[in-house]
Length: 72
Image (cartoon, rainbow, N blue to C red; front, top):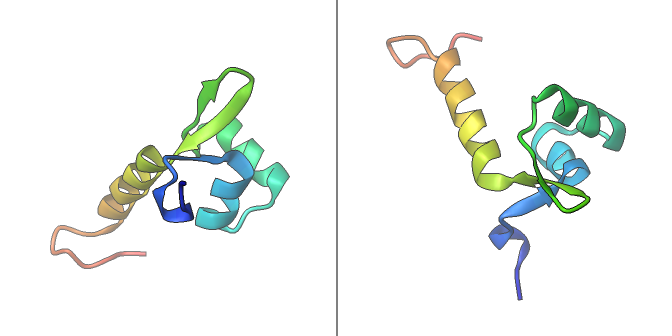
């Protein structure tokens, strides 16, 4: 049985809510824009957790300055 921490993919609304505090509609809009990475499996759209977390890691690295201090 798969637990929440072991899921490899999430639904678009679940990923939007869990990572960005977005509602269902806003989550799908973000996915459509490419702000949330998605894959299509049959008729379903899923968010690969690894790809989403890698995207967030890259964004965090861009925010940090050369000295490692975050510049927000």
